Length: 96
Image 1 (cartoon, rainbow, N blue to C red):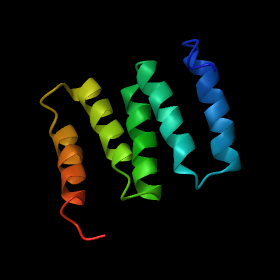
Image 2 (tube, rainbow, N blue to C red):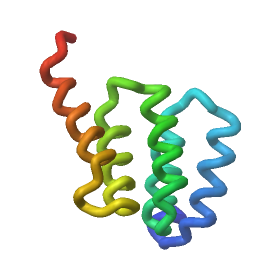
Image 3 (cartoon, one colour):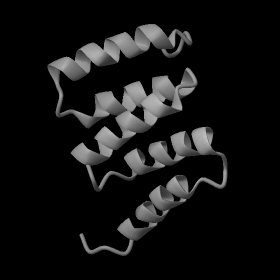
Image 4 (tube, helix red, strand yellow):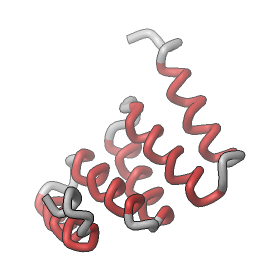
C-alpha cells in the first residue's frame, strides 16, 4: 500500500521487517529493491537484487531488476546491465 502512495520509506521499513522474519524469501528483497529504485537509491536496489539472485539464481526477474538499477546508476551503456541481460538470455539456452 505504501508503494502505491509513493511512500517508499514506509514501504522499505515494512519490507525490511519481512526480510528479518523470512530472510530466505527472495520476494521481499525484490519488493524492497523496487522501492529503493523508485526512491532513487540505485546502490541499495543493486544490493537487494544481488541478494535475490543469490537466493534464486535461475530467476530472470532478479537479473532484470538489477540491470535496470545498473542503468539508472551507470547510464544506458552500463556493462553491468548488459551482463545481467546476457545472463537472462543464457537461461533460454540451458536445459531444464
